Structures are given as C-alpha cells and as structure tokens.
Image (cartoon, rainbow, N blue to C red; front, side, top):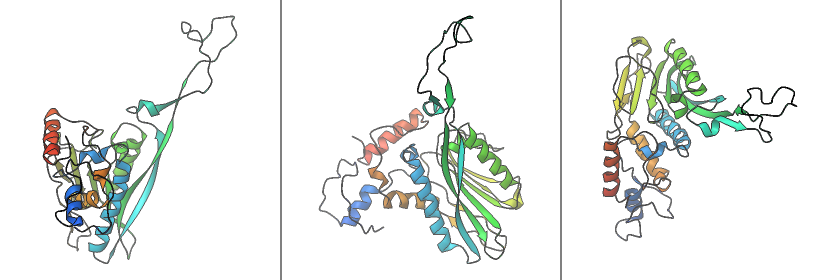
Length: 291
C-alpha cells in the first residue's frame, strides 16, 4: 500500500533510524504495519479507542458505499449516552463538594443533640456523556433500515447506564425485521449476552439475520487469531458481500500512523493472561518494537 504523505518522527522500532534501502513508501509501510495478526490490543486504550472507533466506522462506511448494490444507502448515525459513570471508574464516579465542613464522625446526624448543625462532606454522582457512532444500511426506495452495524465500546460492556441503554436498543432491533451485526473488539467489560456459547474468547462478532432469529452466528476469536471475515446480511434477493474487517483494521493502522501513538514497552490495557502477555512480549521483540 502506498502512502502519499511524508512522515516525520520515529515509529518506536529499534531500527527506525534512517534506512537508505528501499523506497520511502516501502520503509514507511514496514515500520507502521500492524504487528499483530488480528486485533491490536494497544488500540483499546482509553485515550485512543474513541478515535479508533470513529475512524473504523468511517472506513467501513466507505468500503460499503463502494461495494453495496445501488439500491442501498449507508448512513452514519450517532447517539449520545448520558448517565452516571460506571462503578469501574471510581475516579470519575463522584465529584466532591468544593467547600465542606466535616461533622462528628461518631454521630450519624453529623452533630450531637443541642449543637448547631454543621456541613458534612458528601459525594455527588458525576454525570458523563459520550457519543457513539453506528452504521445503518437502508433500502433507498423505501427508506427502511435493512442492517444495523455496531462496534462495541467499553461503555456498552461495563455495568452502568451505557450498557443498559445499549441492551435496550439491542432488544428493539432483535424484535424488528432489521438485521444486526455486532463487532466486539475490545476486551474491557463483559460480553453482551448470548446463549449457546460459554467460551472465553476476548473478541467476537455477532451476525443476527432477522429471518433466522432467535438463531444467530457468533464468531469468537482470540488475541492471537486473525479477525474473521463475515458475510453482511442484506435483503433476501441480494448476494451478501464479505466484510473483511481484518484488512480494514490493518489499513487503518497503517494509514493513520497508530504505531506512533502507542507505547509497546508497556503491556496493553485490559485483561491479559500470562500466556498472552508472554506471547505479546515475544511478538513485539521479534518485530523490533520492544527492547
């Protein structure tokens, strides 16, 4: 893949210093190629994932607009989730009053009988909001939603308002005649509920065709696995195009220089087994991304 713009700075490889061999494009592609065979867990960090999520939605939309039959349109939609911060984020869960006077800790009322009332420091749940984008594939002639494609974020998987609202929306889709594609490539939080699979794969893709419900296809995959290709459900009369999500992720990683934004000397955020931690260490050292 050719990248037209030049690049300043270092990508983090030990051999990232100037290399006169090969063209600039060849050197740049080698240095900024996703080192993981599938999902790169370093893209899941809290400071990076919102950008990855939005750009991935945009990249999938661009691919679908080029490949879907003309009878379909692809629309990027956005919802705003407002609520109290999840309990897993205690630093954001409460705001402490700017001015407060502590009362008597031994007396539940804050002051003893006969004494003047005093203020007590209390905790106020902090309200947070986040924007989440998703794709809707519509039949242009009728305007009806044919398929909804969601990429999950930690907000959808951690306990709290975001998960509850997302599950409510998911239920409404599953009760409708609209297909649902759910892409889960973040390890934080708990997977959304399904029956018939009790494995511990950290990543999964769900394809729910409306005419086959309650049956659906689940593609679980591991950190060391490639991201599976999936057939995207449309109306019955049309062939289902193949969504090559792994290629899209790799192209995004290369084109947006995500290799410059991660620190491969640290472990990635999120749950990680000792076996996977050792595998990551070996992979990054072999790739020249970790000393």
